[in-house]
Image 1 (cartoon, rainbow, N blue to C red):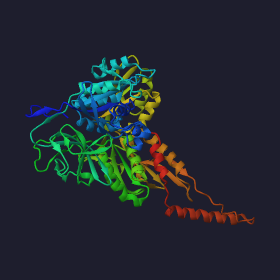
Image 2 (cartoon, helix red, strand yellow):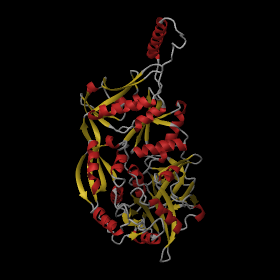
Image 3 (cartoon, one colour):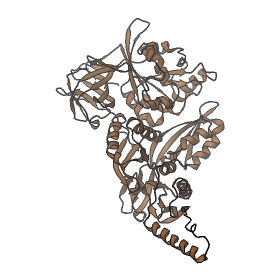
Image 4 (cartoon, rainbow, N blue to C red):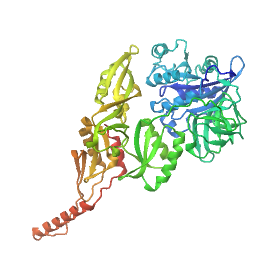
Length: 609
């Protein structure tokens, strides 16, 4: 957090350091945080466990960080001075870049962790540029030097050549064994800048995260920039316009620990009288209600979801519970958005926006675990710009809302620029994968003797479901990818409907490129044929574009042997019974509805595009 220049009364706080740990996924951020907590004795040895800051079961099971986690450590340096170190552990996956950018707002420095075996990867590059954009001092650290395949000198050269950071004297550590960890703390104290504050009589604190506590309401994570906050103060959220009285302030060590006050430069939490999730905005400025600051802190730019999907409760009576759960989840995850919608097939639910497919998966899993809800998700889609013949432009994130094709002039879809880092021998397979997904390769850059970086332009829709899985598969796990949104481009897109027994099931509708529609339609029909149970009548499953059927499968009818009771006699007796059964099935088909199980929605979602 850098103050505006040329402010009178600005001074530094030499005994505080605020920093975050950034890296590509699985390069050892959380393990390094564990060792720092052990070395500073912030956590008792009995309470120590791996990934101690990852307090979600989901994070621990998958070995990934989803939420940023602040913690305050006390460290006595070699010069005998005690320093207060405020560390924020951040996620590494591209879907959670927003969490990383929020953490950086509360810091002056960043420890960049790079795996000595893997080297610089896509998210390493992305997070470094994010730190540079936030004016952070970056300190490279090469981790996992104890592994047999480690090449610390080669990785140091990569950091210098790719990221333009001085790295030949970068610390060589092993977070797992504890090698070189004390040197990291000394380097944090010496190399990272202390925070600055302005003594002008105003209080300013930045909200960088918040969580919902069922018993205490909203817990706000903040970094105090100017002044002091203590229980009893009446404070105001500048952008939200809400006033609240402070009931408690505290630090993370790593559990919440109440303190008498939070002073300038410190990171901690605040509990007030706010009970509604929507009253807190991430990036907001907290100031005293009696003496509000005339200069709010520079906030955070609004994040826009990239992927949209419908979430519906399996049990329709859980609709209100789902609404309240999403409200609470939205507080813990401000990148998640939702609005009510209804579907003929699934009933009442919500149209939700996510940063990516992992984000969608995590939200579903959190709803199931934290709120005991079973939900069905519809096929993910992106926001399309539909240009009408009358000159108007409509944003469509749900195929159901797509206007009639006779009124549409053309459609545009979101395009991304993808940066793929891979080994030289896998270039051919990755180029083929990119071209299969309607992408083009702009340029290739040689990073070192073994690896290259491909810059590709692709439609966002094509990487939604399984692109990352295929990328890992063709590169034997070595390729990594990061992407950024670059705008919209005109494309030949059509709406594809799935009909069951002649009725359109809106939950299966999707917007797709015309060249891929037939293949995708056949795939969806085959998947549905396998999971929809047989009925008493034959059920046709059809894929259609503008009333034109492009694919079909039929679920055969269950057949009861009505002639079993005939023990001989004339053939006309059997024929009469069969004709009567045929008439009954015809009548049943006219009034019968097709039962679609929950597995059908999941199987369609999982069929590869």
